[in-house]
Image 1: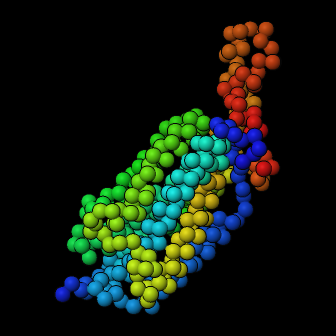
Image 2 (image 1 turned 135 degrees about the horizontal axis):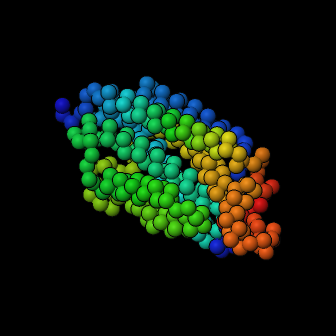
Image 3 (image 1 turned 60 degrees about the vertical axis):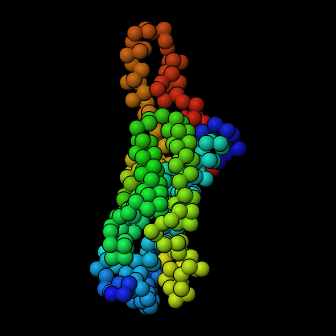
Length: 273
Length: 51
């Protein structure tokens, strides 16, 4: 942010163009391949769930990182709301979208694990229900963002909505402790046998790096879109928009009534350019 | 029997396959959107505004 940024101040977001997100993506993909190979072919079979337990090596890292992405979205929403600046709004959009994608994947993996172990694809138990609420709440915010044209209003209300939706994130995590749930307790080094630690850890870091790269790259997409929204229209478009008005006013309007009175004369545009 | 699950590799492969497809498609989607935004000409050459 800039030193001009204060509460309610909105600056055009900065856009970086380096290859760092791609490096995170590559590192994450490599670790995921390694960890998945270990989990599928080297890790021992679990006593009761047998080979089905191997789903844990992708399911649990997905869950951890979905919650992490949406927790980051909560932080971005707070900073967007109280510090201002489109940079945080761009990060908020990115974190929400990546969190939603991982949450959707989480539900699919969970269903594939639930069927052979519980006998059903889905059950409305506390963990699954809170996860579904989390998924649809953030997906709804993302969908509604597309209907608001004013970037300042969109940033403000979506940050407020994301903060409200984030109340559900700790509920997802603690639901298996607070309520009687069909879902097992959280998988941590304390609740998982040491024989399963390594593939779980490798995949957890792989998913973390992948998520970092995706949020970084998606932030750029959001920032570029916001910048194009804030940019003044090309001179020919601005002149065409002003032509009927100047014709009705007459020649007395003069050139001083030109671009500054156009539709793009938002305070944030001048500040950004 | 006896509370022990036998087999189930098809669910394991399905879970890993779904993960691969979703992560791959989403990564390609983000990359494609990034390139499209850059091609729209709204991209600065480096850090915008020099910040």
